[in-house]
Amino acid sequence: MTTRRGLLSKLMLAAFAATGCGSDTDGGPEALSPAATPPPNLSQSGNVGNVTISIIGASFWRDWMPEVSKPGPDGGSPLQSRISIRLDSDDANDSVLSFDVRIYDANKQVYATRYSVKSGPGERAWDGRLSAQSDVVELVTREGAYLPVGEKVVAVINWSDQNGNTGSVVTREAEVRRVD
Image 1 (cartoon, rainbow, N blue to C red):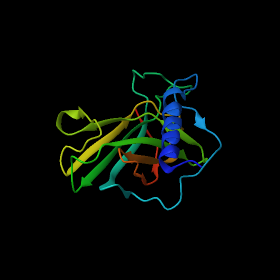
Image 2 (tube, one colour):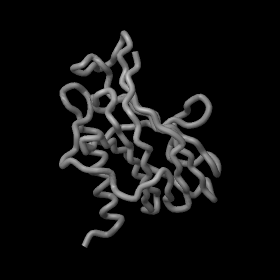
Image 3 (cartoon, rainbow, N blue to C red):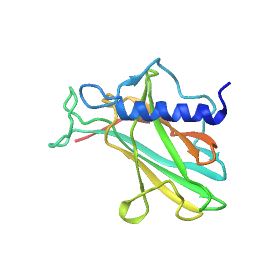
Image 4 (cartoon, rainbow, N blue to C red):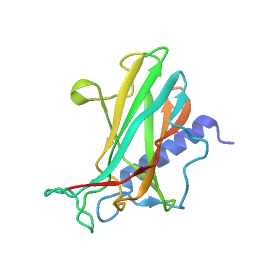
């Protein structure tokens, strides 16, 4: 029988493998299979241990500016995204958080997408620790899939802490925008 912690470890390893190795010939992540829908009953806020996680906002876009890094077949960039999240805790020094992000499109495809974290003034890198009892971080990617402009997407962020507590939050459905 697999323990909750053992299952979480396997899921985290699978997520890491998918985000680290899942790229197609154009540089963006491949859809994971089989096709899926976001887990039911997720909301924009949830708890992991003693931390409350709330999504403040999210945006998704593709870039067609004159200099496009890794252009896709249509000449646009891979999906780019910024997700703003508020983290609140009773004890800021108690929790160390980690996460993975899955993008779900309207065709029920899911994409494991590598995000980095920016936090606070000066866009300092975030190590998973809360800097105060309340912190705002931004999850940022420039390495998403080559989804069509106008596609409706949601991002599901799966969180865990050092004690094996887990939880997930989901963004509101948003449209992939085009930036020229």
